[in-house]
Figure 1 (cartoon, rainbow, N blue to C red):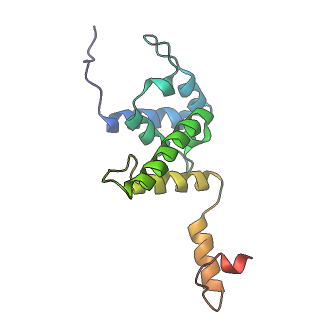
Figure 2 (tube, rainbow, N blue to C red; figure 1 turned 135 degrees about the vertical axis):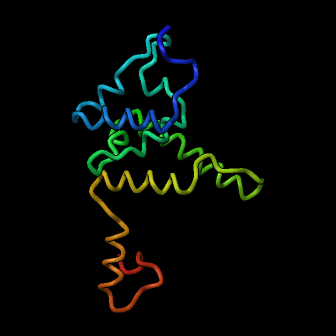
Length: 143
C-alpha cells in the first residue's frame, strides 16, 4: 500500500507541489491538465475537488495565472462566477453566504486582466491624476 494514507494532503502541500510542476516548463500546465486518473478515468482537472480548483486558479507563475489560460479552467470558473452572481442577487431577499468570497473574485478578475497585460487600477489612477477635474465617474469622460 505504500506510505500514503487515505486522507487528502493539505492544500498548502498540494499547491507547493503543483507550483514546482508548473514552473518546470511552459508546457507543464497542459501536461498536468491532460493527466488521467487511473481509478475514475477522469482527466486531472475534473478529478480534483472544487477548493483545489479555486486555489489552482490563483497560482501565479512568472507573473501569469497560468491555469486561467486553459479552456477547461476558464469554463469551470465561469460557471462558478455565474453561480456567485446569481446567489448575490438572491441574497438581497434571503440570508445566504456567497459561494465565492469577494476577495477571491477580485483575485480572479485581477489574474485575468494581468494575463491580458492590462492593469486597470494603474490605468485608472493614471487617468484620474492626469485630468484637471475629477469626474464623478471616470466613464463620463470616455464618451
